[in-house]
Image (cartoon, rainbow, N blue to C red):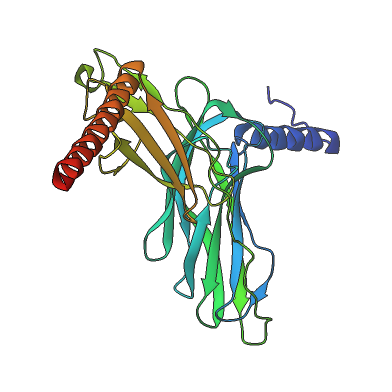
Length: 294
């Protein structure tokens, strides 16, 4: 017996089409993060400056780490980078131009970050020659705040502008005269880290161009060294006056101090000894003058 052939109706075809669409939509994961570049104008003149802002849209996901590179052509040069106010609270590799045509960066946000518009950093570019300048991303990665650092897919929105003599010439108002925010110093010690040595912990925030470097000084008269936190103390007794300078990219400085009571007493004894020596020298000088007059 031959099976009867049933001609499919339009309703059946429409239902099958809906199933295919649902399968495709559910089978393709939504982007967990979207990186974008925003510039305030479409054209600039040679020797002009403009600011390019880099933003992150987490697309509803909680993210706690990211890394990547921002690419730019030879027609542009970096005049400055600022990360003040970034959603990245700890930079493992602060945004910096380490080679021609690229700015690499990586950082973390402990506790995670979830928002549609999160500022990462800004780049001040200077246009060098006429042409079309395209800004794009490369090797972008984000990681979910799920305890496993699970990689998540990303999308990217690039930008471009025209460099032309016909465009108005301008310089970006990117001056920064405000020092980094006040910060504190702390000592830490663990038998399982840094060979059990005492380390100095510090971190400063800057709302302008961001912190460029830290300078650590152990003692009143010791020379300072450029260092990062955590910093292994050279004087493990911690019997010293510790100073840390946070210097931003514009050269503004904020200083923090840390000293123990023992260190304060030691430096106070030095001061008292210096005063006594001065008094003794004055008394000897006065006695010598009296003897000379006789």
